[in-house]
Length: 403
Image (tube, rainbow, N blue to C red; front, side):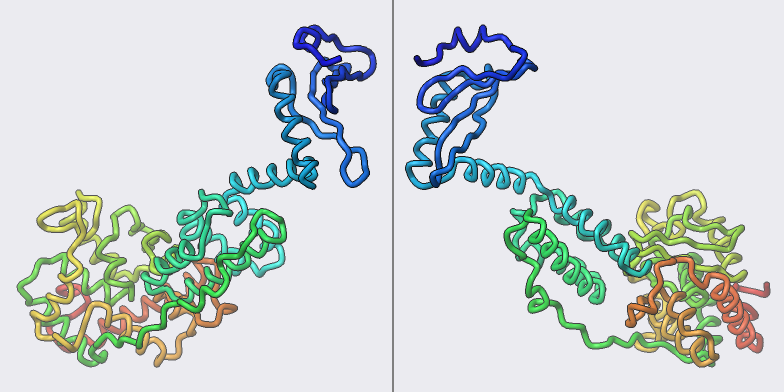
């Protein structure tokens, strides 16, 4: 006899599980807990099998019969309803399985076997570039063009080594997803085929150290504002990139500790950078505080203090004093690198001061404060050397006037 809705509704649990039969293999299973589950019995490949069709009353008797008929049609077509249901479940899970979840699982699995520097670097680029770009998207929806676009943004910063690492890690993450069964393809293969080519090395012009006193003397008498003059002198003393200096807020500087901490978000290589400040640089920044200390930005724009000094201001000032084609703001980094290397300083100290990533990945360090005290001593000696070469001229020190 077919089951009635009344019988299904009034059925009570017993000490042992029992079933109320409907027709064509459908039954309502009632365990001692009192829940009511629809079951469909069938034979496939000569073997008895059973699947669940949901719980009563969420799935009504009429709906259960519809689901039974669908399952019977699958059996007739040579499809096992149990395996079909499992495949549908996996497909639903894949739709909800985000790249962020997969990437974090890959990292947790891989990091214990890496050197600390590699683990730090992978986590840094996951957090700063990869996950913000595609992390919220289901793994199954991510395509190769999506990954090309993501890597292009990293390449656009000029960090081609980082872009190469990210391509490598994306490939590993999707291979991990294939092995777990949450990805069906690996869209990260062959990304190197469209990788950006390294640009020709662009040498920023710079004067030799012997000509620096004249440059500073001309700068002291130039018709440009004091913050611009201070900015140029700080580039000479620290070796930072002009953009890192121009956009610096005051809260990055600890003048009592003679330290400037630049967060990863503002750095080209997307890792934090600590700059030791020689005493001459601290003096300059204290002078600057009297001019712009009431603003958030150290080098607040003249017309709009909420915006930083224009990126053209420094090079324009150098042109005005006669150094067009001979010196740029970025060129001071090359001057510092040349001079410090010629004086025999440890290469790693110099590279860390200039916030360079080492071409040899094993030499690169995950500790952003590494060599801080050595660099502090090195940069103080550099600042003192500049004072020494300037002693014979009207520019007695790196500041206007004597220290």
